[in-house]
Length: 247
Image 1 (tube, one colour):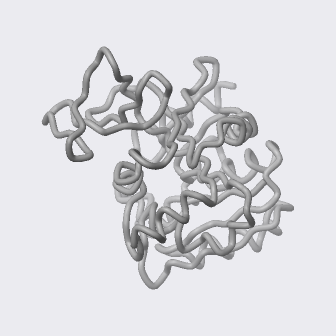
Image 2 (cartoon, one colour):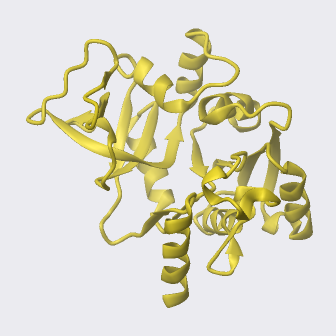
């Protein structure tokens, strides 16, 4: 199984820690967040990993070299010239990932013990183009799925804005979920990107919303007995740090 780890972010929400350190190397529970993700993927059977880099990317390369890639086959998708965001980052890394099989995408600032092997298998069994890890945490912006767990829209519940054009949220027909920063993608999804002319710098959520009426994009809710933290901001980084040290 293959995976892509996003490690190109600027980490502005973690300043001043990220003034001289890439976000992915900020420590939580005594280890850099990138190390947590790599070791978790390795333990769950992912043997080939691609990591994208941008801000202070040479520090990430040196870190990986110093640890012999943690015994995993690791490739680098180099975005030091221009950060391409989540959608563009996937498309740039595709040549290193697309062997005809699905691959998992994992933000480096997500700390979780979700069963990623099960998520991957669920994706294969459902024959989806993409499967998104989701949960019910409080936020203002939600992905909207129908009762078959298929993505059909997006809503900002504070402003009332909805996407895509023509979508109308109905709480009796739809379920609101927050995206969990982990998803599994099939090569069919890359074909949608290329056929629809997506290139360069773009985010994955606008792309998902643009194709949700023709692609099969499924939700996979986080099991309540699993933990999940977005450690890309100071408050939750500290919360996760305390949690890990209490285990």
